[in-house]
Structure formats: C-alpha cells, structure tokens
Image (cartoon, rainbow, N blue to C red; front, side, top):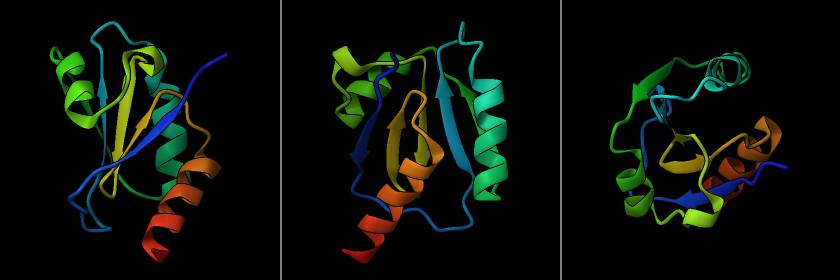
Length: 98
C-alpha cells in the first residue's frame, strides 16, 4: 500500500505554472503517473531528476516514514507519492477556499 502526504507550502504559484515532479533518479513509476496528472490537470508537467530529493523532502516537512520516490508541487502544495488525482484536486480546492 502506498502512503500519500500533502504539505502546504507558504508560497503560492500562479495557476499557469507547470506542475513540478521531483523524483529520485531511479524512479521508474513517475512517467505514467505524470501523464495522468498532465491529462487531468490540463497543465504542463516538468520532471526534475533530483539527486538531492531527500533534502527537498526535509525542507517541505515530509516525514521519512511517508517518503516516496517522487514529490509533486502543484500551486504551492507538495504531494508525496501516488496521491489519487481526485484527492489532490480536493486538497487544492479546499486550500483555495480558505
């Protein structure tokens, strides 16, 4: 079972910004997932091979126990691992209403 985590970040990106997906260099699962994200969000997805992926997760406050091979940054929120797209959209909509 995959774990997922959403972490709010203090800086909000513009809606037109591409979705950033930081990944461990050995991650092979993110290509299919990124295609789904691009199709469902109708936005560009920029892949970042992150040799310092662990430091990024520390900076974002993602606990090591919930760590995955890729981290998506969408409109200032971090999504760790294979978060269902419907859940990401719901989280983003909730924060925008607040």
